Image (cartoon, rainbow, N blue to C red; front, side):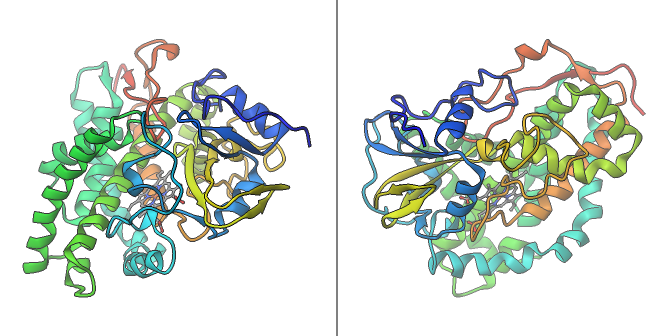
Length: 407
Ligand code: HEM
């Protein structure tokens, strides 16, 4: 294996190969050395993992810890001034995405019943109704409109609010504050302030649910005396954030990608039964959660390299999903391919809890949008669409679209 020097400036982010493709340097690295040393902006060394097999193996190995400095709050090496993590940091109660077993197991288990495939199937009709009502609203507007603001963000927000029992009227609060966690170089104190605002809001909400539980997921959690108020807050925060940011970006970026592939878009319109496969392929192709972070809890061999205990590890889901060793013509969007096996919902014990929900939302969203807006098109040149290269979840900031008639 050719030995390249550590990357000097951290993770390449610029989408220099196009809005949907991995940065060229990441593609080159995956070919040269799928497990590569890299230097973070603060000067400390760690690893960047880009090959499909290595990423899958890593995600299945719990010696790669998910404990990060304050979990979702700090992505340590991307925030200016943050220093190297040398040991697992204190856990934020309830934020089980950033925990290891047995804490992770205990909390995740509290939610698995609420997110089973069967349970999600029962919700499908309601979710389709939410998407259709949002499309009714969209149809009343005079184009051009921003599809993110009017459709991609509201649909998953409405769904997760209803499921959790969070008043949608409070969306300003959580959409604005959760968005602040997504900004890569947001100063730490601003992230902390946003987290403070969210926890104040959620503390009141879960306390009232504990006192008078209703029929929603947060109420069910609040009934469980084994969970502290702090844990309820952390879990509510995680579900609210994970439940709308991700799917919203898939709907926004996914629509952009389909508009840029008009033949496949036409085929999908003509044959809606292709939609479930197309959603899987869009998940693979777009990989909106493009990177994840882990921490080596001991010395670990991976892809012929030794990752020393204490190293921070950046996992490129996007590069893995575009690995030609796993997918033929990986950089081509092909709604007919068998895309299952992609890693866009993660892999291993942290694999996305909401994946069935997300699939139902995406199918309902794309199905309704394509059916009811047959002349949908971009209202600005494709190269002017603002990409979320500055955010922890990839997508488009805005998607100005227009149409000539609606059904
Ligand atoms: C975990 C992606 C939608 C809730 C994850 C992970 C990924 C992911 C990659 C693994 C993180 C890791 O290993 O560190 C996505 C994508 C979505 C989506 C791309 C939309 C297209 C949702 C929805 C919910 C949700 C709708 C609703 C509740 C969660 C939770 C976890 C998680 C709670 C943490 C699981 C754990 O740590 O055990 N998601 N997700 N996600 N996701 Fe999703």
